[in-house]
Image (tube, rainbow, N blue to C red; front, side, top):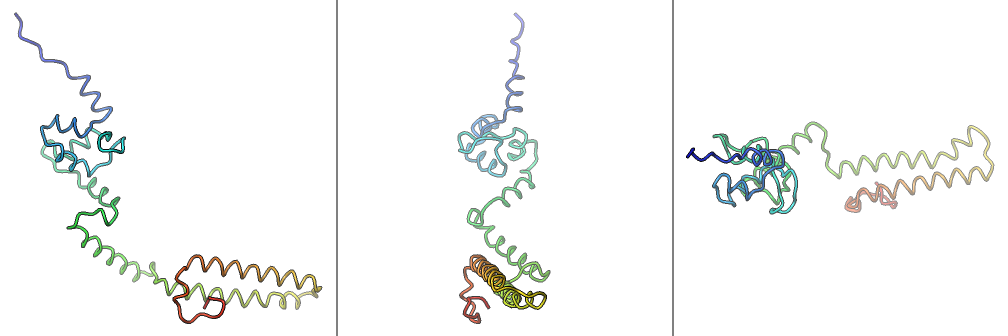
Length: 191
């Protein structure tokens, strides 16, 4: 009697590689506890599925995350997973480092001139609004100096200027809900 032949697992392996693998199947395959496998897979994105029972992972990424072949988890995948986390989802040990990094980033951007304090931006916008308001209030007189205006044309120009200023003031107010906290503004609510 000839020796028993080993079963052919080729189709099953091909299916896992092409269709992906679940955490439960990966735990069975590697002999590792499910919670350990799920923790390692937390560093990579599933190829499909949202709930923990339906998530399917790329086979090669999943094996790399588990450290198969003597390699540790993919550092780039871990970094990408950390980037996608909200600060409240970070492990406690990383929270302090996250906020230190944010402070350093803010200081760098401020020094470079790419990050401004809200009060500074409000002051600059208020200055621009004042200049526009002054130009718009003089618009009627400036046009009248160029050509004679009828009373109806004066009324139209004044109406358009007032509407433009009103809309600009409204937009500024919407953009800066804390505008009222600035002490030195005029009656229009704008500095």
